[in-house]
Figure 1 (cartoon, one colour):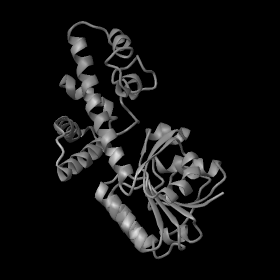
Figure 2 (cartoon, helix red, strand yellow; figure 1 turned 120 degrees about the horizontal axis):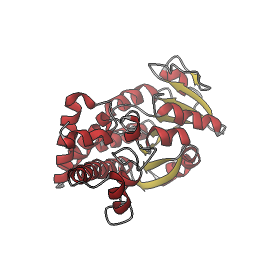
Figure 3 (cartoon, helix red, strand yellow; figure 1 turned 90 degrees about the vertical axis):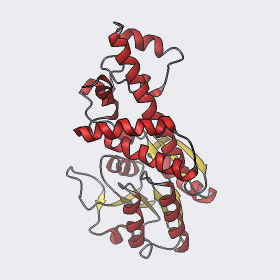
Length: 288
């Protein structure tokens, strides 16, 4: 059993922390806006109090600046050798800076963003993409396995964030491609079910189609069956696509489809759809 301080008890963080409690870990949580629902997580009044006796700290925060600002508070208050795990999705350079600050303070650290959405967080089936030293990864692995199904050590500091933004760039592009195919099929008189049955068992197969189909019917668990409520908000997809574009520019990589997908989601969010699941982009493709 580990003593864990968990920061960020929102839609993703709260179920992740609950899975740690179910696995027998002692969890003290902190969020400036405490959860409205009842929880079995012990809530601390300040960030520093949550980390007082912790061996491991996990952060799930909105941005890299939030992470760095919190680390500045936590590092002086943490016990020597505390393992810092950041599961936020942030810029690769910000992740590397978080590692550097932790190292200077005598702490171990990992960047470990996740994929799988709220459903994966609740079910404990998240994918963790982890960057950091081998010893830190080995120490974190049992804890991560309490929250996720697939735990991948991607390399050194920042490698987890690099994997996350590359993965989500693929997802953003492929969702638009799948949406365009369904809209074309509609105009050609081809039913949703017919296209799904063909594409899902042939060369058009991809996760955006078979697990998150943007039209209602073929995949009952898809947000398309709930008027695109819940799931992974378009504003968050736009955030990840922008992170990928920033990294591509810094690295001198050509990502023309990534740039085009970013522009599509920027317009979709500007039109008031930031809270709509990202598969709802099919509405923009239709011109709605």
